[in-house]
Image (cartoon, rainbow, N blue to C red):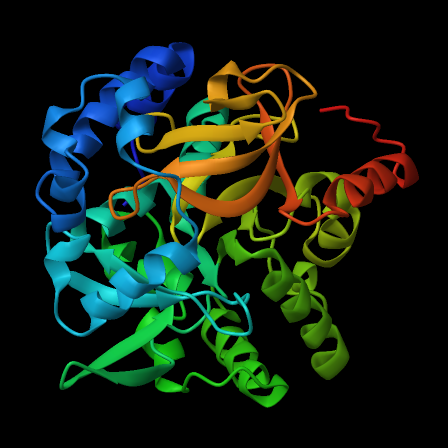
Length: 381
């Protein structure tokens, strides 16, 4: 049934208000979320070993909990897979996510809990804020073109148990799509049924499924991984001599997993999908950390859900304390991983706007500067 605009605006406003409030006062929001996280950490062995229950300030937190990379956490994660779930988790995992990238040649395994999955609904904030500010409630009359990765790609034997693992975007879609106001097509279960291969032929089967299921649907939203959405457009034109814009008229695309999507890729995306709004999401296997709020081509952090620090040339500081033009290595505290060095370089713009400019590599800043010069963007939002 059509959504009443007044009731719809009230509903979306209530869902978005915690984000709005946190962005308006990030210092207070970060103090509050730290205390919430410490209560959770105190229910784990790792948290108890580091005195989570006795920490009162941010300075205390930094002294008690060292910043850790995935390699540092990996021995604990291996033990969790073997059955020692209370090492880092206060509840049992509902899924295991793997990264598409690699760490020293191996995919990272990250446990996902029910509470963690509910947090990932924040990925929908970009879409919800678009509807809230434009009044385009007809977006909910259509469907989301689901081009997510599979939620199950294989199993591993750990501690005498067989554990399924998959990609976080697929696990998210499978568990929480029922809690979002727009239907995803194909269903994640249909994508999973095709298998978890990463070959070109495996993706061609998923693209054919998406075309078959959505051909006669009103696609109003396209969400997911930027590279997959781009490859689907190319596949459709190569194999069927059509662009997505020949079949559908989506209102908005909410995309992640590539730095600078709304700076470097809008021309190519709109050539395939038509005059669509593009909103960038900053997330990873470990969580959904921010999303584009408005027309400015940068994302705004989820200060109400995660605790954000950055390691800068002048030392470790809070993300919201960064000055425009300053860069640093992100340290994020999630429900599962305290003070996690995720390996991304973050650049600050006028508050509350940020960009992830790439991985923590020596050439990332040079590459960012070169792209800004070649596109004549030069740091503009």
